[in-house]
Length: 389
Image (tube, rainbow, N blue to C red; front, side, top):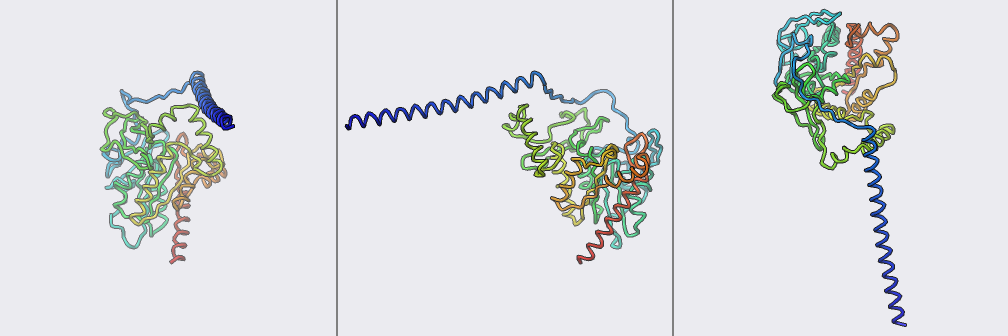
């Protein structure tokens, strides 16, 4: 009996081992089959839908000539900035507008002392050509109109044509913070985010750019700014740092597709920002750092969403608007979205009343509308602050 019992145990043990071995083999076989299928699918997708990574090398030859070159000059930190105490003419059909800068390079002829008078509140307007006031007179920009309509306000226009959100942040750090503003108005035009991904412009201006490292840390590159001919970068360098494993996965078409689908689902459910691009990841990190620096010096940041002309055709909010407004809520920042107000104004009249004909910039009438919106916001803000006190 004992011998039979021992034999049964041995047989049972052998069967268990065989079963475990077969199970392991089946698991490995299934895993190998899935891996093989994915590899074959990857090859088929690449064969019938090749993805080419086109890197743009620094071009040779002559650069494009931009109208603003007559009043700008190279800057070691910002790439380019306004010449000081400059009087120039902006000529671009159908425009011919006089442009003036003061002793600090700000738009207009008015001078501002770095030590702010105690009797006024001071606003610093940061941004690109929309904030600068491309195509309108010095006195017609929303900054100038806002200042003219409020005797207790000083509004410094630090807008510079062609700036990306990276240069906007650096312009505050390098120049704007010296003027001790109470409010810092951050003009956010959608193209500003894309511009932050470039190492130099199509017109031949070298510029600073940030890379987003692990932990969302920003690393500044190309300062002092070099000319494109001496750069070792492509025009659009890698802006987000990935680990070796992440790089391996990102080379897979299937992985990128599944990742895109997952992120889109998360976006639709409201878990993440609607804008899923790398440029928004970089830009919101830059915005967050700018907001932190503004608050550190005791000023209040305000984001002004600036819509391109094409947004006037559709009343549905874009992913860019939603992402900026979501960012504002997360960071507890006032966001003034001019889009619905401009759309409503355009519907009541004509787009050419608010966007320059054959151009993409605001007319004096659009600047006036924005100045009125800002006045309303600041008055409401003043009242709420007084009530809280």
